[in-house]
Length: 329
Image (cartoon, rainbow, N blue to C red; front, side, top):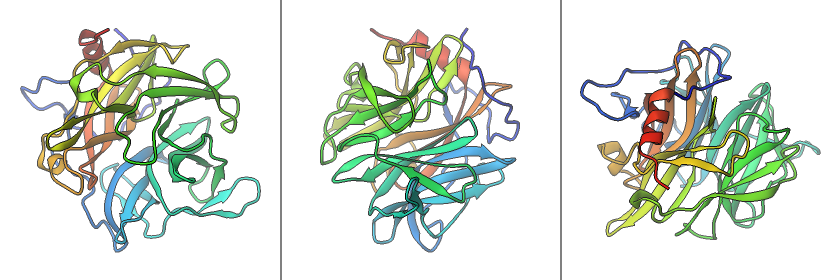
């Protein structure tokens, strides 16, 4: 059985055991959503956000859509990973070379990952169109922004949590100017997080109904002893609009462009009221995972209906086993 490796103990991870008679390897927190609308005086909707363990508690970078409908990134802190205090002033990013303030009108769907003591934020930015941005911090006080890694248009930048064969790797989904009606998963490499190349197709959409329109990355991949567990979102179009679901694949340990398993089943799809009703109905969108290295427990943060922040739980070995058993070519 595959096991997660290189993860620290996280005894205070937010977690609930699987409900009785529940069959599947990922289950919802019974008290979802953990962040409702109007979390403070500035933010109307908080969703598609990312959390890490930090100094005995938790810190997060949150997508906050303000009351003028403009999305920005906000810092939040929590003792238990469930109740968050989110600041009312957006994060200020400065250019890593000049120190000048970097301002954009749209910042959304962040991923937050720690690599060798530095915390990296990857989000969708406005750069003559939607594209990926990267910044880093060591103290969650000063945030230094790196030049945009890719040209427009691109979304869903997801960093692997360590270098592989001496290089950084990032998943992304090239897109178009609008609400992309298509999309496949790609991976790119970099020696320094500034210059990116060796772009490779990882996976095309459409192998299952829930991926029929497009796919994209979710949280940072989880390292296994025999590969990487990669959570994704898949999108299909129905007569009533788009439906966003959560799924998973497993890629090769050293060649992350090689898919070893792709699960035919989704792991979560919109069923609860807070997922099927909201600003954008029928959306579950995974962006962040906490991992307890001692037990293999995970807590997944996901956005629902473009309105709320929610939690789901599972055990890595059960999820990996499910993905392998339900894999298709």
